[in-house]
Length: 212
Image 1 (cartoon, one colour):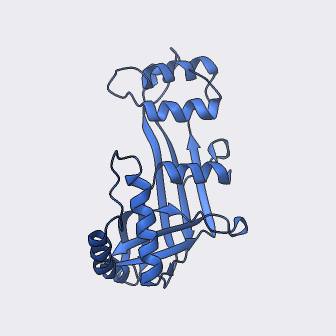
Image 2 (cartoon, rainbow, N blue to C red; image 1 turned 90 degrees about the vertical axis):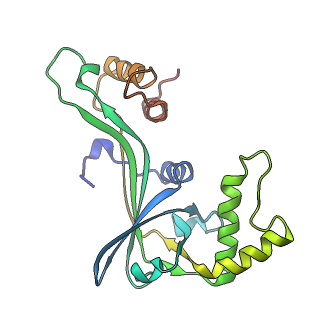
């Protein structure tokens, strides 16, 4: 990720928030056969000790664990938050070029493979994480039949824990623009134009400390 100090994000609390709110991740491995990429949801290991830093748990479906050579080398996990096009027409009359605002984090570590029992617990947490918003949540082990089914299919997945030992995060949200320009950008992102993006606007309001 291009280094630019003004956009650097180093607050662990903000990175954890980014992961919680944007759990769909890209997993990238540099294997003996070349680069391999997959896409899976990840969770923060909320039970990890604070001294461990950021710890992720997830799983891959077989045979992705073999394709990634999972556990044999470093894995890069990319978290992508809200992002969107910023038109130069949203600035002022001075010459300007378009850009893209975004929030992203790159997290590196070597995965630890989980036992089937622990993998099942992670899968249960994963299902609970998303089902809790449903009016009638369908838990992985919510019924005897569901629990038996989950016990059968868990063998088709490989769970892992990733203790992040290196990370780079960026929050590029027009921090280098004056307040009046930021206000115009927010107006466009919260409007009904072709590049409206309420999620990106919310991130900008957070970083600029601007209330609605």
